[in-house]
Image 1 (tube, rainbow, N blue to C red):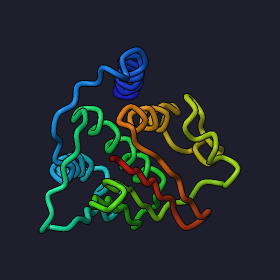
Image 2 (cartoon, rainbow, N blue to C red; image 1 turned 180 degrees about the vertical axis):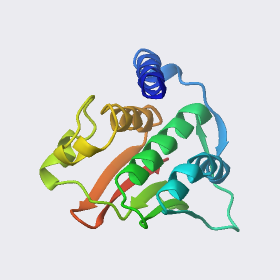
Image 3 (cartoon, rainbow, N blue to C red; image 1 turned 30 degrees about the vertical axis):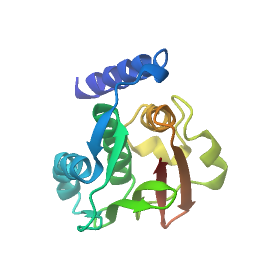
Length: 174
């Protein structure tokens, strides 16, 4: 039931994004606060697998962007959830929020299994799951939805991976 509910939520979010990308309701979003809230929801999953889940940001800087808070929360939740699922027990997942010259850097790093290079171009396709995903629950919608959310916010999403060492999802929001 939980898995089906999650799939339906992801599909509904995708459906809402498609026709109205240009009508996206935007407000000023405190990305550090949003990251703290999202991480707080993911702590039980991290603790269950004895993983470290951390947030890095400059405490002296307020980092705001103009965006849709709900969708940005879905984006962070998907990326953190994926990182926790593909990181072995005792591993680390770090969320980074940083203001830089090009815009806001939002990144999720993990010490998981990494993704084979040949799979990276397909990661953002709906329902795509690389072969290492066989042991992990999922539908192949989370990264596709994340990509759509980043694009709807005029941002860029980059994946950097080292097989056997981990994966980085790096987002630049202007």
